[in-house]
Length: 342
Image 1 (spheres, helix red, strand yellow):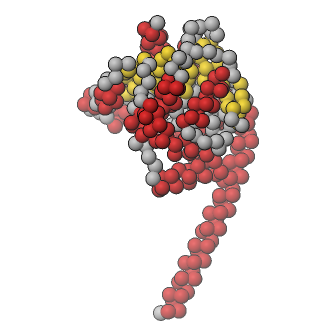
Image 2 (cartoon, rainbow, N blue to C red; image 1 turned 120 degrees about the horizontal axis):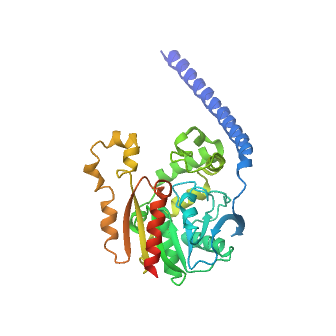
Image 3 (tube, rainbow, N blue to C red; image 1 turned 90 degrees about the vertical axis):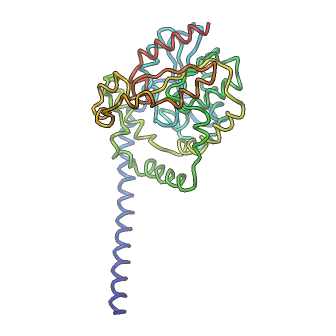
């Protein structure tokens, strides 16, 4: 019996060693294949704006529109997407007809370099302001943050109130909601694994859902190729990891200063609203009785923001990337918001 058990253990150990070796070889194969694909995709990564050196690395900044307009709109992306200057273009191309717009790819996103520099809120804001300053733009600014970039926008308004005339949030939450985004050791380890899998092995290439799905025909074929190449190159890297880890601390720091005394319009995404709901078979399947949930979808955020006299909310149909689903309506509402500031 002992011989049998001993022999069985040797077989199990041998199989495990073989499986580990196969895993190592396959990992090298994936890493090599990922590097080859990145080389092939470099032809799509020529910046559409300018690269400026900030804090020892290059940030991408894009500007268009009238330099003589009274306000400059600063578009700011959050951490949930590998955004690029192209992604928000359905909205800012409309806004550029009346205003100057500036878009900055934060470190590790879009055309900007992966730096490894700290992602504390002071560094993030310092880098964004330096990139904006490189364009020669002067305030007053209307800040247009997407998602949790509202943390940076509010901090900007807190520290430099004379520069910020208003804030337009795109599916942003409260500072308190981001304060609660505390990661434990297990969650940080999982993100480290994801970072390694994406940055080194290119495992994200197997996940079609993170790539461009131009269901509204807003982008050209070349733009889709560029956005997909950027996703392949920047899906999840050390800058994006560091920003996720710092998110709660950053929100707490801004919250300590308090909500800025500046007019705000917060757009809230609601996929249970038409016209999005009527076009989405998936939403119809998941929420056949959507009327029951539609008014509850954003109720908590609406109730919270309604406590502030300087914050207005508006729901629009779609998911958080509202600049894809409702760009014309957003542009119209932003114009009204800006007119009311004067």
